[in-house]
Structure formats: structure tokens, C-alpha cells
Image 1 (cartoon, rainbow, N blue to C red):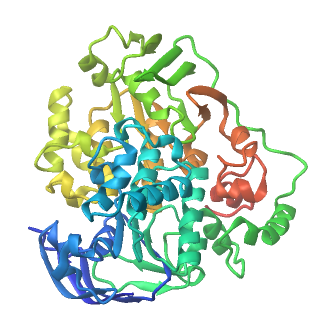
Image 2 (image 1 turned 90 degrees about the vertical axis):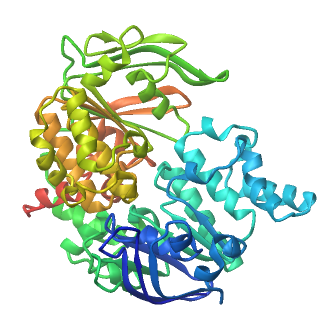
Image 3 (image 1 turned 90 degrees about the horizontal axis):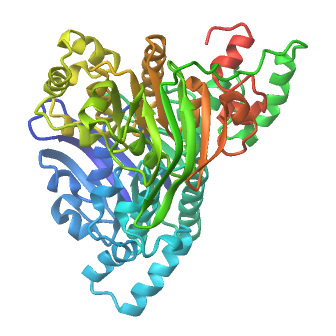
Length: 539
């Protein structure tokens, strides 16, 4: 179905190729997973399959690309759209209408489909993705995860032979991600649809793939093989695989089910009459860094927050979790003053958010939204950080050190919007951290980040906490929460459902638990490091 021979591609004005001499063959009806570090060329490879590279992005492409016998370089995206369905990393970038149902009909209308056929296909995809309740909603009122589902649905209405998805679960909660991947697996098995998917959260998708294509650092050839074989030899691996490799489990487990026999043996090694105490929340201080009291907010009459109350103490790291549409992003925007609540009060560092000027709030509070590109507007990354320093009257002496910590030093003179999605995420984080805020609010901070980049982020968050910075992050990434959060606040339908210590909350949850905790069901073990430390080994 798909064949690449000697493909090398340079983006405009870039001396280093994004892809170098890539050759591969993807059989019809297979399920391929493309992995690699942030900036390795995963999105670029996917864009070659429908002609976006080079038609939309420009640059120079050498080599041969064939998809279903067609040449995407010759035909371009329009000529490939009936064969290749493409779902972007940022779903907002592919929406062209305001209503969900109109978005699903748009591609079919452009191809002059019969009205009855369009209505039938719309109903089918709404049911397949369980989003029928979103039919009449405006796309700009949807949560990030809901937008992701609508983007997938809009592509499926054309019933393409090849479905290409760039990090389709990056904004989805664990249950929604499982639902989407199950649907993709069914499309692959029942309809023989060829699926090529790029993903960083391998714990979600590795078990579904027939083959993994690992793109190493630019210049090296891809590593292609069955998931177990590839994951056994590359640095990027989900926690269960990391633990299996360290403890030499054979065959290497890819799922919790496969890991159960090894878990029983491991529990025997970990058994100890004296249990480590369960993690407890920080003791309240006289002056919380953040207080939210009886907060209500609605979009066009639809309640998104319903009497939310919470407190975050200084130097505390708190995770907001919950299903897509639970109100996490809305809560963060109300906290920072970008939205005004209908009722309730938010106090930040002693400031009443509703009566304090937004400029004053941003001097002390850093906020990275789901779409980090909204923070980036300068010609180079270094200029971006210098602008922030100037605006907040902070000396720019630590710019180089911060970029190095985030793995962005080599991109200091790069136009920020030319960076990969993961690199843009880190760039936006740098743009707010350079001002040394007292409170940091992060909305899906690991979107587009590989395991190595996530570890760097975890180290930075730990350093900020030691400096007395308060951190509130909204995320679906249970592994990040397991590593760095003191407390979890679980939202559901705009209300606080659970507020408790991370270890207790994860162990009590079947959905919002880390892989290691699901394996062992013990509140002492959330991460690979927890297990190895208990065994007396170096994490």
C-alpha cells in the first residue's frame, strides 16, 4: 500500500534534513506505529503520505513515494484525499466550519456526495466515536479531546483506504484514548483499513501495532520490526517495558495482562512486613498560594464549572485530572483571569483575580495553554525569551541555561512555529519560566513530548518546587502525575469528585492509574523508580 524509497526532505531554509534516505514498505491492511524522539521527523514522514510534504510546507523532497500506486508528490493533497485520510496533531488546524455536523459533512460536500449518503455516513461516524451528543455543538466550545474526536470523525466520513494519524490520543483521557484506539483496531481488522499512526504514549498503542517504525536521530536509518523486538532495543519505551527490561522478563510484556505472571513473582520479592507510609497531602499553611471558592462558569448557557472549590499550598504540585470536557482547561483559564466566572471567587497569591489587572497577574503567574503556539510570536526562540524578560523586568542572563535544560539550545535562532509540536511545547514552557513566576499553570504539558523530554520536564518541575514555585497542571498523562504530583484533584462534569494524595487516588482508580500501579495495585509503587528503589537497584 505504501512505499518509500530513498526519501530525503529539507524544510525551507533548513540545512539539516528532516528525513534522510528513508526507505520502507507498509503492506495493505497493516497497522503501523511510527515512534521517535520529538523532532525526529515523525510528522514529516506522515505528511509525505498525502502530499502535504512538499506541497503545503515547501522545501525539497528527493526519492520516491507511492501510496496505493499513486504519487503524492505529483497529485498533492487534493488528489490523495479520497485515498488517504489525515488527522493532524493539532485538531483546530483542520477545522473549517463552526458546527460539528457541518465539519463532518464538509469533505463530502466538496466531492458532491448524495445527501442521503452524507447523512448516513455522518450518523455512522458519530456512533462509532460515541460523539452523537456533540452533533450541534460549536467546535470552538469543545474541549481539546473532544476536538480530537471530531477531527477523526471528519476524516472517516470519506472512508479512506489509508488512515494517517499524528498523535491522535495526545489530548484524550485514558478511557477516551482506549475507545479511539479500539475503534481504529476495529477499522483495521474488520475493514482492512491501512493505519499509520504516530504516538509518544506507547503504553496506550504499542499492543495494537503490527510493526513499529522507530526514527532515530536524523541521519540514521529507521529501525523496523515487531513491537516487542523494537521496544527491547530502543530508549523510548513505556514504563512496563522499562521494568521488564531491567528485571529481564521474557517474553517482554507489552500489556498489563502479559505482565501479570511476572507481577506475582515480583510481589514476592517486594513483600515486607513494614509498609512505607502512604503519601499524604501537604499540611495547609496560613496563606494558600491559590484558593478557588464556589466557582461557576458556563459557555452559552451550558455549565462547565459547577461550584468548584479547592486550595493549593505554596510549593505544592497538584494535578487536575478527569475525562475530556470535565472542565480542567476552563478552570485554569478562570484561575489566570482569561475567563470571568458567573459566580465565585479566585484568589492568587493574595490577589482577587476578578479585580486585578491581567498584566499584574501574568507578572507572577505563568500559564501554558493546550495550544503552545499561542504564546509564540517572535522571529526566533531567543527573541521570544528576551521579550518576556524585558516585559517582566527580569535580566536575560539565564536564557541559555534554561534552553539547555529543555533541550532547545540548538534551536535558539529558529522561528518558533517551525519547531515540531513537542519542541513548541517546550519552547512555550521556556517562554513563561524565563520570567521566574511564583505559580505555574500547565494545560496538557506533555502533549507532543517523548519519554526523554518528559523526564526533562519532570526534572524541571521538581527543581521549580524546590525553589518554592507552586504548580497546577491539567493533564491526562497518568505517568507524569505518578512521577511529580503531590495531590490529585479529579473533576467530573464541572465538579470536584475527588481531592486526595496521588498514591491513594491512583491505587483506588481503575482508569487514572499508572502502568506500574495497575500491575501491582499497591500504593507504594507508582513508577519504575519506586520498584527499583525497593529492590535496592539504581533507578
